[in-house]
Amino acid sequence: MPATFVIAGGGLAAAKAAEALRAEGFDGAIVLAGREPHLPYERPPLSKGYLQGGDERQKIFVHDADWYRDHGVDLRTGVSVTGIDPAAHQVTLSDGERLRYDKLLLATGATPRRLTVPGHDRGNVLYLRTVDDCDRLRATLSAAGRIAVVGAGWIGLETAAAARAAGVEVTVIEQERQPLLGALGPEIGAVFAALHREHGVDLRLGVRLAEITETGVRLADGTHLDVDAVVAGIGAVPDTELAAAAGLTIDNGIKTTADLRTSDSDIFAAGDVANAYHPRLGRHVRVEHWANALNQPAVAARAMLGREAAYDEPPYFYTDQYDLGMEYLGHVPPGVPHDVVIRGDVATREFLAFWLRDDDTVLAAMNANIWDQGDQLKALVLAGSPVDRSALADPAVPLGRLHSPRAR
Image 1 (spheres, rainbow, N blue to C red):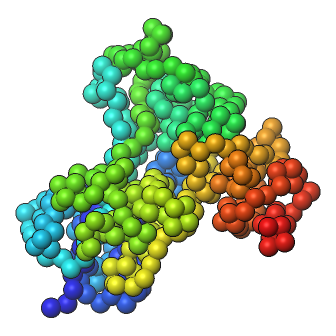
Image 2: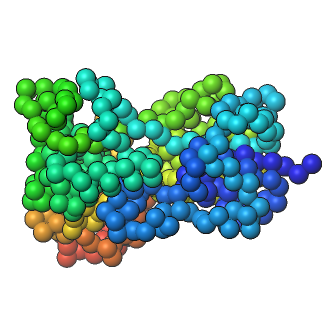
């Protein structure tokens, strides 16, 4: 019988895995089962262009329905994988069907972290993960006068920017002393704080949400804010329930090797849910960003077909807020001492930033409103060799000189 590969998940990683398997010449059966009733879609537009009304709904989908038919992909929308029997090589679907698989890819993604304060279950508390969430938030922004956003991470800040573009008054509540503190650190976090304040956001830092009331929110210091809706952007957790029940190794996601193979040799994982060993970094890394969902499936597909493969791309993410566009490349491990070196003008928000370890190697790099240096930034991150900090900060010194063999 021809081989059957099952893909659990209905997002970008799932769709790209099906695409990669066909591109690699797999001619067996592909069953793609996704919980949502929609075609597989990309999530970044949900907090960016689609949320703000600039992108048409059709643009969020990875492929149209004809693509799945033309490529022989058995797409099951509104049907999820609810159980895995690794010994029998079978999955159970939410409609009761049992399917045998030769290889299984888990692309189950992540779920929003939920508020737990009193009033968290009120009808005006919103989250942003699915396209249905986004449609509800769009409707809210068209009618609300003021909202509170809990959390100053990527989702929270992009939601705040979309709300201000819609003319809604916004208060952002963040318990840390700067936005994006865990992702970018205090220096760059301060840039985003200034950006949002300049656009009229009431940014409350170092405060905690205590309660959601009938008319608004109450902070831990007793302050009450009248708002029409509350948007929670306090992070996400990998959706590992299915994998854990099947006995796979779980550690901040589904733990995989560099070729995205789990502790079961016939089960793979990709995207937000995968905590994959990164050969360049020498450690496991789980990244909840678009680039992993886009690029990891091609590696998983090759490995599922028995070919040598390893995912070693540096982590990447981007954001667009008001007039600031930013791309970040690399990884700063938690707890590793580092400094930030700036090249350019922070005041005008046209600059490059570099995160340097104490041995002067570049761990990560970011471009803010500078779009012609991406290849140079990637080369610096991948070089793994010390750089001259003063030259790195000097716009007159070409970046190419700093990662050239001569510079090493």
